[in-house]
Picture 1 (cartoon, rainbow, N blue to C red):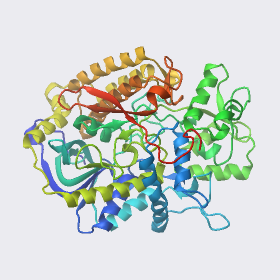
Picture 2: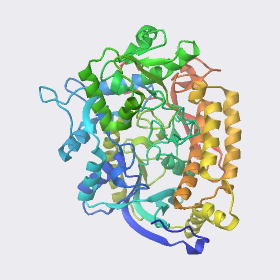
Picture 3: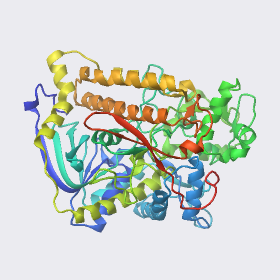
Picture 4: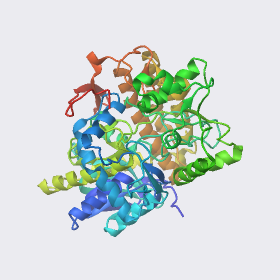
Length: 585
């Protein structure tokens, strides 16, 4: 049973820990970082801080049916970089992508050794589901990974929510947070810290939210709310490419994956007239193999032109293929099979309707996140980033996030071994953070009324949807709408002083909305700064509809001043390592 909310700060118990490497977030990347750290230095104390439970946390909680990047025979690291670069509209960190790709296969093959079932073809090779994809039966893949973390002797703190870094100047020396079950305040001092908290969902109103409990029936893991980004933003870390949002084509009214159908079963996207949209209108960009932002934008263009709704055409599939497809879904999104059954939909007669998702900030798919170096060190000394929270490497997906976790662990160990001292805890900062964390709970006890997190979340999502290019605006935005969004984000941020929490779970939700507001603010600044349309579907500026290579063939980065709260936005140059046309695979 969860502890009661405190009526005053003096009632809050404290847990003080010291570790060698603290990993915030025990998802895929965090687990791989922990395993890599322990096998390189078994003597180190490695601690994972996880707000859920490691067995079913992060994006892999409910499993996967495919690994989307694996370098097969006859492919190379260079080919992967070229393909990913073209998919990202010519903009990624090539140095980071190369180092990730060099470890990509090792991570996946180790997973198989630990028990992950990977399908094989008649030659004993991994079963291909596309140029880079391989098919797996991954319903238990997270459980397998969690068990391996325990085997290596890592310490796992389940149900502990991270709220801010522990700082000595601008140096990160650990993190603070609170227990969702025990209600205690955690102060964890560490020699090196790795953030692996995932991306940000819930910034925008999803199309499935129609005022009922489908509120979080979304593409991305709803528990990933951008906390890792927000902690870095508040501490003054440099962030990159937030404006490259991830918007995916999904099954309408359910939010099921489409690549399983379109890539795995070669089902073309068609409009209401039966025209093959990608093959006929986007042949110059690769047709059905067009970059994902093109595929996200295509249904929007059809709706705007009066040719919606749109579908993936499954009417060519055989009964045996339909059966196999449903088995694939049982590995990743089992409720989609129930959804089809509930509607009595025979997909060999009636195609599956598709639409765009709400936008996300997720560095495993696009390039949004912390600005890091090849060792995965952020711009804050002592802090490393990996997985969805790390920027610069789009299309790393499951295998790439795992590889990046290994790289972050190696970087953290090297940093740890170079330390002359481990820094000093500033007790005044600890006291201030403790007061900030429990304020919504104490306010509820003292005043008995206020704004609950769900109310503020829905206001944020509608604001972002309508003024910052949400799916209900077909991802379109302009300067005036974005400036409106910034103005009203500031109002919402001011109103966080009225947030109340009735229990520890709602206290967690209060901090989730505070974190989302910080991420949304930085995102809108990035969207405003990039006065071009580089990724139609992910970032459509109707007032700047063309790509502008003279001004924006570069990274857009930002940094918030921790003292003033002012956000500085600036650019960093593109550095090409792999030769070739950056817009072609």
